[in-house]
Length: 332
Image 1 (tube, rainbow, N blue to C red):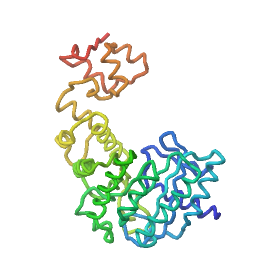
Image 2 (tube, helix red, strand yellow):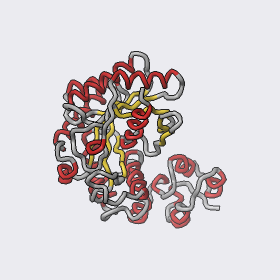
Image 3 (cartoon, rainbow, N blue to C red):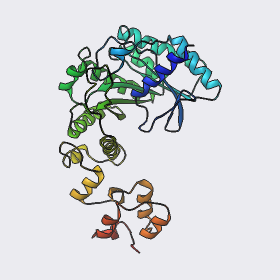
Image 4 (cartoon, rainbow, N blue to C red):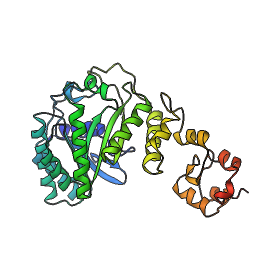
């Protein structure tokens, strides 16, 4: 195996998000992702499409066969270096042919490996291929590319947003039927507003997609967008906070839309608390699930600090509430 080629394809897979804190370990050629040691690699960086922010259509050259991909991962797994795998690719041929190679790599891996397997669905994959992916993998994903439909053809002129959304619905149905998970991702920083992203989340969560990831735009030399400004980590962090509020706290997306203009000026939870006050401990800025449970059990402010919780952002709301007794909170 050409290690230079393998390293290149592994590094290029960085644009396929699997966890917001995914880190690459050069010494092992794997990613650290949510407690997993993930072999995340492209099968090819050769691409027939023309996404203007992406390296592959303009400079991609490398390619692995399904057999090579499976062989590399299984070798890493047997050595105890990797315990999970993510198979993705650029579009180096007809999309159905590329999807077939991804499925073949997944099937070869499954002959021995029963752990976490993530397969990327190509735009243009057929319904049967998506069904097979959901049967083989633990997680299936498709890239939505951008938040705003009208921007899609400007950024990716060869792809169809309608076709991508259609496949997202198929993926949601097939993974739901098989008990698997499904995700998507968009590039953030191409001119969309945070309200646009909330609209996107509302639509795609309506399809049944389980998670939206945000890939901050990074200008790549040699691409049409090489002179654009990189997106800030702060904005992406606030978008993940907004997404967490929707998925985990049950906040209505419409409520979030009411407190954002072009972009969230700060933590979305803080904006909600300023605008609507707090009705539950979990609504207090700086309070997560564990601290909220402690508040519900009538733990004092001092006790929370002794338990290791940082309450800098919370203190103003805790001490200023008129209905603290509703939470059973005692301030020392």
